Length: 222
Image (cartoon, rainbow, N blue to C red; front, side, top):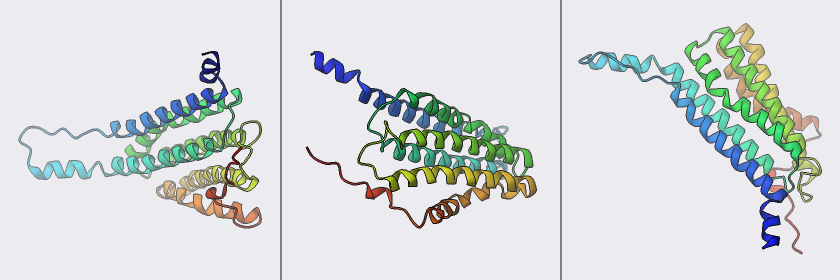
């Protein structure tokens, strides 16, 4: 019984709780996005055309919803990918992880702000800048997870570097969008598509394409 109690409250349990809590926050945030889309309310008996027009007028809100849904989804996937490299819990994970979750929790607001003011400089700039802040928080967490004592001993240096490059590419892509929004606001969020390009540039700078995530050496059986 004593041994079971030690396992239940040990470092591995702390890592599991951090992951479960993070998954819950991501799930709630991604659901809250749709709440920001207000269903149109028309007077009873309005013609069908008015309903269709009202829905069409919500196009920016729906576009913002889909963009941010996948943005948050990619952050969640990255968080999942990063934490899969960890095998040891450290208290150093707690605060950076909370900062990342804070940035994610605010995404519905910035999504609504940009969607309600499509193509406007300040809303688009704020959206991209906040995404860059989220990227910085994510990159900080990746730095901790991909280094001792948290990282699994069997994770190769190439895999750790690739994970960090993914985080850096998000920051650079978001900053590209923020810079573009100052000159051509309508292209600000479009520039988020440069994130894969930035990742390619970072890999080239490192001396060529690094090993993919699937190349993590198999765990040794003892």
